[in-house]
Length: 289
Image (cartoon, rainbow, N blue to C red):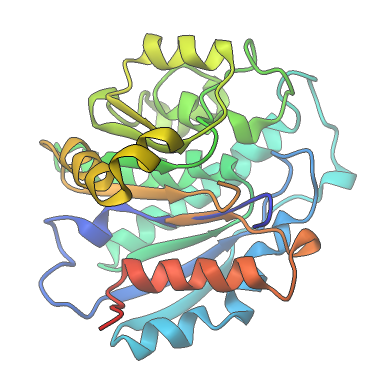
């Protein structure tokens, strides 16, 4: 598996409002070719790799109406100043996340389901913000399923690397950095009691403290999955994320439904992108039998 790309399926895919009346759904795909949040380059090609793997045609074969909204504009790292070492390219990433949030909100306003292809996981600060802000208008909140080998809950003060792709969940929960957390002028975007980490296998000491400080509801490690099985873990996770919410947003890091961190540079025969497309199809109704 490659080191990173995100598929983001925001909460409306599984929510009560607007789009669940029929099995067939109206989906709009947007790409966010962002790779300034990670130290390894190449995940900016992830959206193209997933498109080449036949994402649109595969979803249409399941009966969905799919349109491609193209890519969100992203600055080129080589033309930009990296800024502070504890949060490199934070200013540029925040701009991209704001554009992403605005695009996601517009798609929801149009009654469609946004399917966001990344890019590194920092873009989730934008996609989740768009969904959260849309439902906030109705006095509702969303849950989040954060499926990743890492918890992504560092802040500039705790990050050992300064890579912003390790900070989006912290930002969404209101821990900072403010440039990511205050998109649309308010924070936090999500409630800790409806936030679930799934598949975690690598958490540093500072992140453990941030998880406790934020009050994240549930953390399921790879050991939990091995011992209890994925079905039991997901049933409990969905119960937590869906408790009193309008629905839930799935953020899936392929390093680990935004789908983020598909890196063709270190992939072989586009296998990770193929897997990402399979996972997207499963999320939108594909069955084995």
